[in-house]
View 1 (cartoon, helix red, strand yellow):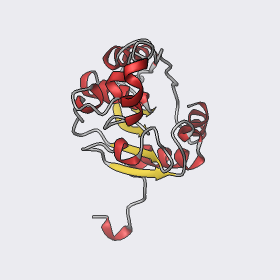
View 2 (cartoon, rainbow, N blue to C red; view 1 turned 120 degrees about the horizontal axis):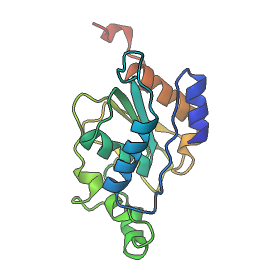
View 3 (tube, one colour; view 1 turned 90 degrees about the horizontal axis):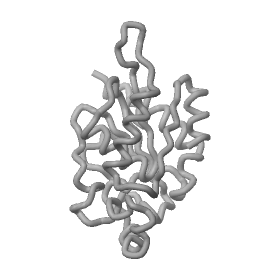
View 4 (cartoon, rainbow, N blue to C red; view 1 turned 120 degrees about the vertical axis):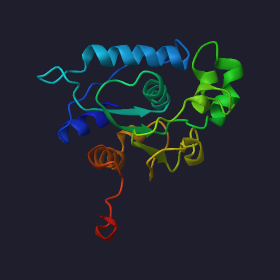
Length: 191
């Protein structure tokens, strides 16, 4: 996420790159940890009001963001971009969870089982959510990244791991954060 962070800074955004121990706990526990780190570090305005906050997450980070905004939305939340988040689960998680769930605790929450966290987190109304999927992503293919209730979907030429490093993704993310869409609205569609 460092390259994306740097790109967003160059686009005029203040950034906070929140790390978390991705192998250590299930999705709800990790999301609460991330929420605490955001609350401790994100600034308030001069009058004590929350500063506008956008959230951008890749893969598991996107699922943590979804849990966070559904259960513990931070003050000032404005827009969200999810990069290759397994919103509908991942078949790779299905194949590896029986053997690796002891090592990577959130893995069962990322399978295609419709009772897991990735499937059951509600999508809150009123929060613009943009999804960016990778065209070559076999970990989280486009159909697995889709999210009912999302505002927009874009596909970038990339696989899963390096999606946050792709300049096209940087441009799409900055555009969504600025406008709430990945593609500019045509003049004839403006009211």
